[in-house]
Image (tube, rainbow, N blue to C red):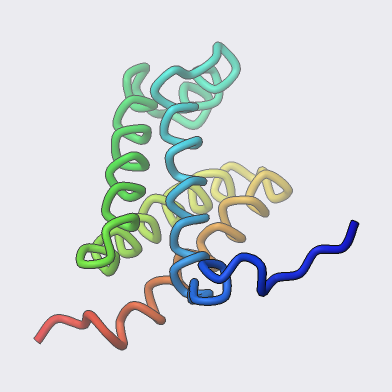
Length: 127
C-alpha cells in the first residue's frame, strides 16, 4: 500500500513552524503531567538537586503553561520564552550536579524551544 501525501491536503498546507511548535507543546504537556504526578524517582531527583519537596509541582505547572501558550499562535512567543527558561533551568540543574548525560535531553529540547522562539520572533516580536 503506497502513501500519497497529496491525498491529505491539510498536511500539505501545514507549515513546518506550526508542526514544530505543536510537537514542542505536546512534549511540555507530557513533561508537565509527569512532574505534577511525579513518581518517587522524580521526587527523589528534585530532593537530590536541593529543591523543596513541592518544587516538582511548580515545574509541572510552568511546563503546562508553556505548552498552552505555545499552542496558541498569538501567544507562542511567550510560550517559547517560558519553555526556554524551564529547559535552561533543567539543563543547568543537572549540569551543576555533574549529571552530564542527563543534560542531553533538556539541551535538545532547549534547542527546539529556541528554534520556535526565533522563528516566532520574526512575526510576533514586541513593538
